[in-house]
Image (cartoon, rainbow, N blue to C red; front, side, top):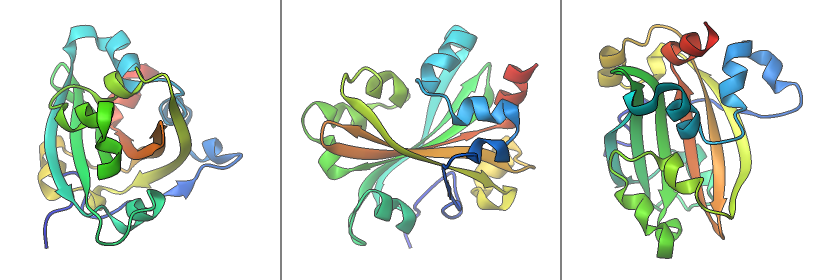
Length: 189
């Protein structure tokens, strides 16, 4: 079977964002999960030029089944899977997985397939008609991460994350973001 992810062993179990959901997570985590603006901009504001993005996986693959359902893709449809590690001063802070259906990469959005180490948020938050359609959250246990990643970063505790469906014009994409303890602790101090 073809690898579906560098970051994840399997799809996380997501919880729908409902009234009162925020009280299920620590206060410092809430500020990241419920950030209404660009996480890229927030990280740049804090870390300046020390903020970097490293592309670790980008391939056309079938998304996880839950991702296919959320994006209304058939079982055999592939999407561009892009996974990155966002860091500052060589410390990983955030892990992100983006699922971009082929139809989303039409016209001006083709740039999304050629970002390399450029942050996705820098591009999509420049679109005037960007809409956040829905958001879920998760707490992923250390066993849910890819072995190479877990060893590289040293994930030893559950990691909070969110997944957001964004719409640009009539096309959607899914962005999963996981907030590492370094990030939470650095902003909480």
